[in-house]
Length: 325
Image (cartoon, rainbow, N blue to C red):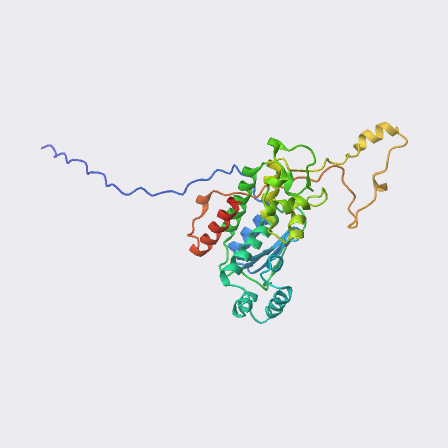
């Protein structure tokens, strides 16, 4: 007797599991500062990650403050705009030993909480723009250090890197010349492109143009005017795109050592140690310093965590204001 053939069971259809997307690493690699910041954030560290170009403060792995010698701090932004007096800001920082400076200012009625938070976020993003690209020089971490002023809504490290990356994209979209960010700029004296004249600029950019004397960098202009460093960078890019500012011609670079030896002959070869040493004891190097790699600009899809809606709102407001400049 032949066995009865049973029909094969129908395959069970299961919903497809959505695998995480693999992101191309076509961007520049993360800097040493970014890598250290990411590791500290993953360890839920509290303290200050500092380098020569800036410092980022963490509390439980989240960014609560950032500062840089190249950017005005919150007090400079508020006092320069006339929102606070220097005395009021000094009293708030003195009271920060017992309670938050933000709580002191809001309780005293000196400034609104929303205005203070937006100004603080501006200062944090400005400082992070200069701090994150650090890839050489000493970098250290001071555990347990807390700033006198902290963000009411801390930023995740990924949110900070995305915000800095979007700012860099906006700069390059305006005028893709990165040397303008770190080089001295001066107003052009010759004819401008498309017949544009300084009189067609806004009052804010005319002030930037007047401060561009060929010796000040955009960061120094921002500190002079008491304005956001990034907004000043964006103004410089707009002015350069209009042909109103330029970088001075670079100074003549000394001939290489080999060429000097060839010109002087084998006996009169120059001695490298005869060059004047820098204050830190490091001998000078010929030519410009090596360029820093760009800040890693991750894809927006890298956010595996839902951002805080209030942080997202502040970032969108800040980005919209900058895009309309």
